[in-house]
Image (cartoon, rainbow, N blue to C red; front, side, top):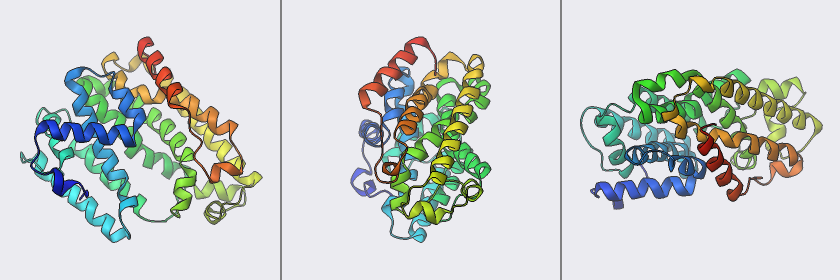
Length: 294
């Protein structure tokens, strides 16, 4: 359970909405800015979904051992069961999810899959293969796009499922490479062990903070994979209904992130997050939203 639950329980719907907006604004700026392009009557639902993702994704940072993380994940799973059975939770994120859940615009299965995928985050096990990594991103980043699309367009969003799968992998890969210093500091390595082994190195090499030509090659290959998935997603853009564009807008930033990763390739990538200035991200999102592209 979030540390804010006790102080937020029993609050009004407006307070729950404000909590979700503030949480996403602070922890997931890309999706926050993209959601601002959503219709007024769907924006709060999107923010609640993204806030749920933030709450689940940050559990690793909030617990001292995996068992406590498992307990929190199970708490969220139990609260979802209550929510989709007609009840209402005390947590502001659950209160925010009530409206889309009641209206049939939210997938309980998708939310539960998100919880299950995040179980991997609690442990220091290496990511075995590139295929496993893409599967993980499919259940997290891609699933989030598809659930957001469903909130925006209902059944019509089904036409965007394939594009969402590819786009989520592209965005997720860029995000994991940007967060390499954060994960390394926590003792985690999301770089696939099979790709590392192909270049004669191991996850321990990454965690040690030693830069090498071999590590540079692995990251270069991952950038290429992200670029291909992005191209494949954009090739399907005609199948993506206009109504779901806000769900896909964060993907417009992948080019910027990959270019930044390419330009900053070196020892510094293991020590600090090399981000793209917010004004450039905002400008890109606005421009693509006006062009109805991602």
